[in-house]
Length: 330
Image (tube, rainbow, N blue to C red; front, side):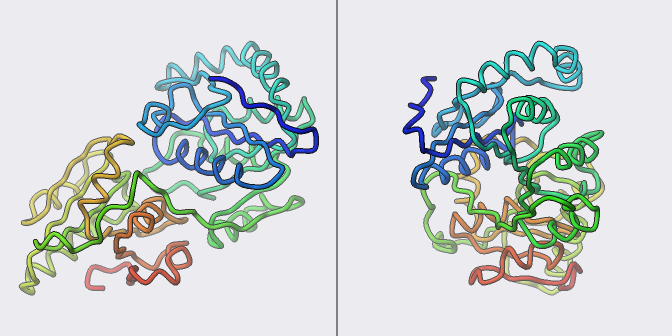
């Protein structure tokens, strides 16, 4: 892709990078770069994995610095072996962009390579921290160890909730460097769908995202049984996302009115899934904040969420959000 004009010498040049292939990371980075471009006297470049699903979508952003990453553990090991060569190539490409500041939009396994090259070139960088700790059953081996090494090398950190900021302080990772508070922006997947509950049928409830233990699917299964036992009005519950088979998912499949689709949902399919729903259900047992909640807000959907972690502050003031204790009856 053609590199943007570097602009007048007085412009602040910012590089936003995120080298994950799928999920919220590349979208968050692209949205952050787009928002920063609206600032006066600012030039913004975006670096994504050359394999990023976001680049194959219908509304793919301009990627000024596509970086070859990997697929699977074997691919990661090969990239590690090639780090010296990758560092030289990356350094040469960064010199052409000449950023004054870089922002890691969401940590990924190869970020220490970028941090090393930026340091060598005297470029300061910030890291946006989405999770201060790994969720149970989530992430990859050494994820938090790599993130801690990256944050200690950064010139500043950005936390997307007070919950995460407090955990970073407790871990000593915010000592001696600025810690900025931000909030998760709305995630837009195409144009806004029609308002909820306009289809005339039973209420449509959706669980969406990574189907991991901290999502509280066991709580939701128990809650659904309580509704059925009490003769609640008919509703449809759709569970869409990807995760390992579990007792909670098997219990959900056995319940009347529940459909489980354990699969990866491609970028271009997310908007349709959100548009189908009247409300998103976040039955989490813990949470830093939620990209799913951000997508629901952008789509004008209702949200029913447990009051855990950073969800309460993220959804504060949202008129279509209902919060409950993390208990089936609630």
